[in-house]
Length: 464
Length: 96
Image (cartoon, rainbow over all chains, first blue to last red):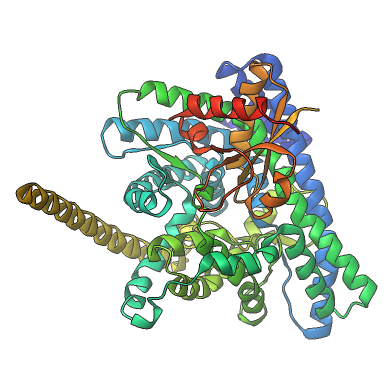
């Protein structure tokens, strides 16, 4: 029965592609959560628009990046055949997985159970980043071929996200001044690797400096604007590929167009998903009305920090440089170059200490390039099979800013032990060791702080 | 022409669009001729020209030449009514 249904789904999907299939599911979902039929259909069509727009843009990007990559190979011997589609491409590919939509109920059920058992204080309201769970799950399917197993691993990720959000909530309040929120994004997972390193860096007093981040950002901020950045990278590639001046400038503008349009089109995904995400949010608030919930959000509310932007801007040239120098890297950095997933965990573990953030980001860049390279085959296969990307040709596609790269690699791939590959399992153990070290340390700190606060209060009362 | 309101987040995709979609639905339900646009935080200054209000989801120390609304309220639901009222005032008092 299940097999027959599965075969039908696969058959239908291969005949229409994600741009038709996923919207149909979304319309049904929308009606289930009591959207008006006309609104549900409107949202569904918009979702199809998002898929098709992304597919068009990714083919266009491949069309300009592939030749210049080829030119760089013949001229300089730099062989980087994997196109970097950035996180927007990954999100489009993740949503095109036939079972993607089931991740919504899984997330909600786990969150409700954990709240009821008092295992978390966080309500994850960030339903957009459900795609991060889907992405890990797709990786598991690529390794094991098992969909149920994929959802088990995704469930583990959901639990880790809630626990990590709990762990950082006080610090996030201290850093942002915004009460009642925390960050449930998977990108925070990289802190498990950064934290032990930062513990060592804290012993170096010379790094304990506060830079005037605001003034610095004022000066370099323009380079992070998508169109400016795209133009610079396009021109750089053109120069390296030995293009003549008109061709360099043309490539610069074409690249600028890509980086400008990626977020614009990606926005339609969010817009079409927002009615469902709102319905869930309202339901959760009603259900836990008597409970003080910490609301888990996507990372951007941390974006008021100039340190994050400076670390991001710093990481751009470093990523390009490393991509040329690192042996074994196959990824030519492009659409994923504004790497927030690198800067945010560095910001959280150092509490905004810019010199240490810069060191952590430098150490982190190779991780992103290697994980991006490792994921290219399955991402490419999925992109082709669901039709999420049209006309990719023979080139491979991946992402240079996969959120929580160590976690994602380890949890998506560790089951490869069944094929005798122990490497991802070792990475998994390393990540877990780092995570538990950080968890224990931060918990200890929190308890000590609470005791100190209580003692201070007692002292205040005594002197009064 | 609807009155322009700007909301920004890190990439102008997810968080800002969530807020924009929600507020747009509220405005539509109240029959107010205004449109919330989601933009990239890195380019926000360019988009603020001609806007009636700026819905922000970050707390920075900058001063803005237009009414600033707390966007977190629309994500968490806490204080949403007050922030929405503030937004309506800003739209009403906007001279263009």
